[in-house]
Image 1 (cartoon, rainbow, N blue to C red):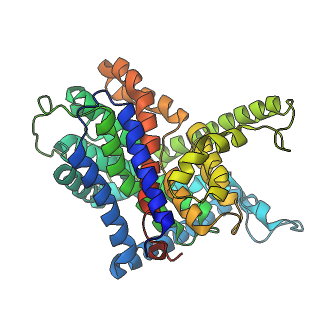
Image 2 (cartoon, helix red, strand yellow; image 1 turned 30 degrees about the horizontal axis):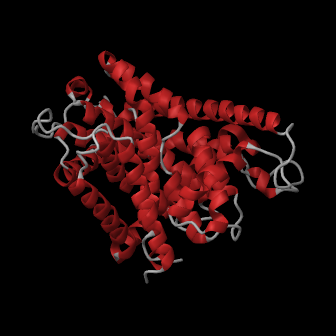
Image 3 (tube, rainbow, N blue to C red; image 1 turned 135 degrees about the horizontal axis):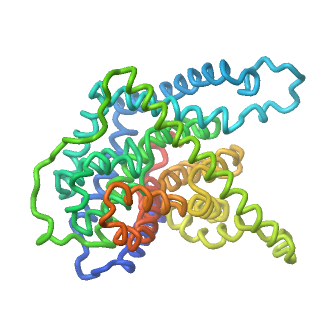
Length: 427
């Protein structure tokens, strides 16, 4: 049933597109057909995934698979780290069961296992066929040329820098709009390994968390394409039609080679995630320490989180979050932008059930599910410098706009979800 809060989310839909239009390099060339088509595609995907019984059962199966994957991963972690991994049998009296959830032992190892599985599934051609299928859909429904369509699809599963690797030989010849699109979509989505990690973080406070996280990353791709085309419009004269080419990409000598190399790639991601969280959380703690010297405002000390809550509360409200939840939701958006989405998901998972509404938690899950943050700016510059060094200056000139487009793309996705009947998600 359509309610006033659903109409409220339409404000966020218009606002996110409007903000990108203000940043556009050519405001007269607004992609009206793409805007309507992308939003309708998102809405249809959400309705199908959560409304059709067969697909809904499939999403529930994804949740069960994630739980099984997390349990299996814990078996390996416990073998290596023993009781430090949070096993039920502790060598000392346990006074706080919640302290057994240690991020380094419960979330980061999942990334390792998923990266290894992804490499194995790629070697077996299962993930490759899935990527090609999504690439075909993006090519036919959103007007993308073959290579960018393939890279966009690969980004949904592999990550913001890994996706473009599959069309590395084409990167130098892509138009400015297409290159910007790849960077923006990379920041609007997340990788398969981090999807499972986010679902692990949220599973105790959000029913069917894995289904929401998976859906969020998939449907944010059309949003990223749309907002990228709004900011840097397509030039038909430059982008001549090309066939879908699925050449290139990663290759492995055998299944064992895939597992070993996938684990090695996962280790690099784990180290980067862990190091980034340590540094950025430490920097925010330093700023909060400085702000703590100032007089209290509103009966509470100043902090970065409070500042973000005030700054982004209107955007959170526009996405459909009730005003009484908007400061907390706005703070999560700010944390995601500055501290990475991992920190934001940890904070969201730490909000007790009942402190914010279930609908607000669902909306924020979609709003946070993307790589758009300051750290990703550096990751993209470094990645594209290796992939296409001759366009490094061009990437540096557009990467900050791409971060904004990617950030607003997840907000657009959250607005589309907020406009749906709450009963669709069992709320």
